[in-house]
Amino acid sequence: MSKHSTECLIYKLNYWKGVVAIDDDYIDEVIARLRAADALNMKSTKDILTELGACPEAVKWAGRKTHKKAWGTCQRGDWLLWIAGKLNVDRKLLVLAACGCARTALKYIPAGEDRPRIAIETAEAWTRGEATIGQVRTAAWAAAWAAAAAWAAGDAGAAAAARAAAAARAAAWAAGDAGAAAWAAGAAAHKDMAKIVRKIIPFSVICKAIAGYEGKEE
Image (cartoon, rainbow, N blue to C red; front, side):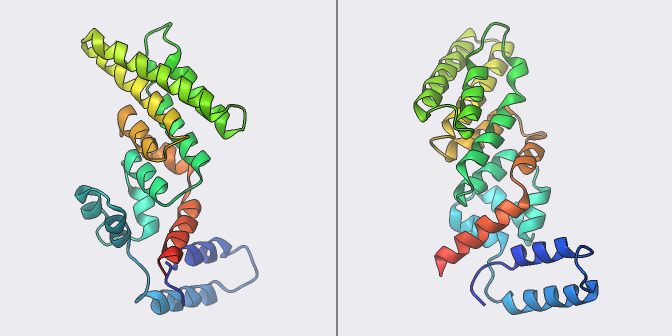
């Protein structure tokens, strides 16, 4: 069997349980044999994170978790976006997830300051083919200036606004640089960001990306 994780196959087999006229015990046996046959070749979550250059904290957290468990239980939205970007997940999904994270921070933006919101909306429009990458970059720079202006104010409220504006800028930049997507989640807030990322990028997408990554390694 080729060197790629059995997670995708197992995920699909579990999905089909109770859907098709195949005995569930038979499917369980097939899954068990797949795991046994591929056990010597498949890379662990920890292995993949290490190869891709994840931070020591993330590698330690992964431990012996399966790909599915790691993706489903991680509470760090920035980590999820980072690995999705490293695995070359569809850029449009990355941008949408980053925008979803950045939107949660818009409540900290003062009334009348529209540049962060416009940056997010422009990036979202890009995913639909309704904006050019040039327009996205222009909006991102505008959000960056908004962040700089907020930081210059120097008080606690301004700091929150600055982080929100920076999150919007990062979400927009993700259209041109996948690495910026993770910053959008981190700058917005860690809490609930992971749920937003998983809603837009389900494990089935990550599964295919892992298979593609391991396929390139052969």
